[in-house]
Image 1 (cartoon, rainbow, N blue to C red):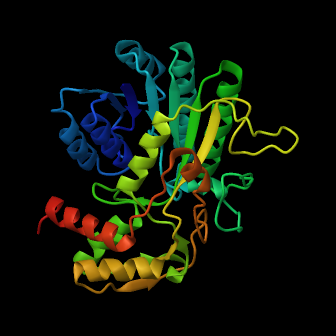
Image 2 (image 1 turned 90 degrees about the vertical axis):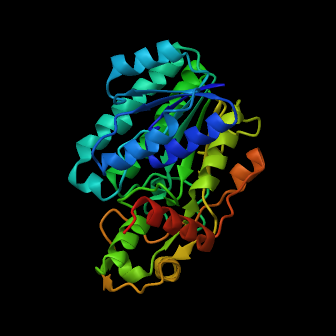
Length: 335
């Protein structure tokens, strides 16, 4: 297939592109390589993809409509995976406009490009952050998600609503994927595992929010990619079980689906730090702090819908995933 991947120099996008190329798909990567975190890491991820004969790349932003439309017209993708977004919950407290530009305006441009060019299936990144203030665990796709606690979460919820509108009005098949705390080799430097590893190796104290008591459904990158590919290969149709008298947020009379991709095995942050200490062979000095604004105390994915429809659910334990990350980190940042 010809698959256009936005955010192709990103953590998930670069891993996904590798997997698609390995199975024989053509991939068109689209990414602006912005400076939200160190662009040299993005360039290093991209450098692994560029030599592949099935890979093409353009550097541009989703908000740049002419550049996006030119990419669609040039490549003529059959399917699209939209992973480009302004990421990060905490940054959204300081710079909310960046989220509107990338996650709302940019996603609108994606929807329009897909609609007018007959794309077979749009898969897009949502987030576990849409569950916001919900306290019922595990989080299920059938739950209401009307109480976001960050602008980042609000834009991801908005993406799901926008996608549904296009599925309904224009019969565009869309699948939204709510990712749960993704980690692994080539990961994001603004995420806990990367920050902790760098500071522990430098002998610096680590900031541990909520005194380390909150839990996260840490999901290994290979499991995320497998979930994305299975979802991409399964083009949704109208849900025959959908009941408009008792509507589910997870499906529709339109060709629309939403899935959680999580390890469905929440781990307390303190345990995550212990595993990292074992892998590094060093103890962390911990700076215990309260929960940050915009953060949620716990995440836990109910993946029943993903399992039912694709036959897949993530299963990599943190002991394996953290060990692989540390191995990569020591190789990428020697010394």
